[in-house]
Image (cartoon, rainbow, N blue to C red; front, top):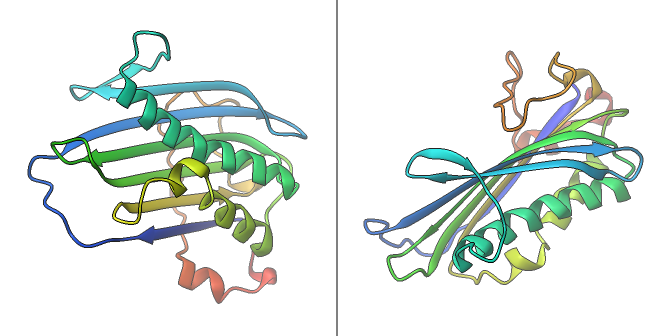
Length: 194
């Protein structure tokens, strides 16, 4: 099996979400070897339960810019640190949800990324490094201790890629018949198991 899933969660005391506001974004990026330079980046946000292209301009509401920057910071740290570890990305799909109280105070953030490698597989040390660095994304670090933060990253090896030459922007990529491994499972694996 050539992929692993990592996640971390930091949970504060429970708060009521009865009057919460929820912001949802998703992205698809393609990357060029060997520096994982972003070739294409497509971002959408959910407006009234409909996915629409997200355009950053002078008319974009400030809070949407904040949510976008939280999401893109995680994505940036993913591809920069994959590069540091010699992991060549083909494409990345991600989703992001940020929830606030009625007064706009951030309550929780959830990010979910699937990174598909183009030319190699990652070992446990490389994967641990990428996930540990994603925790240090400056935007995420400044969200405060009372915010629930959850990020999941699955790195798919070269042979786990879907059988399509190029993913359609923002098309949901499903990898059937594979199990995602949790942190506790990952730590018990030997490199020969990968």
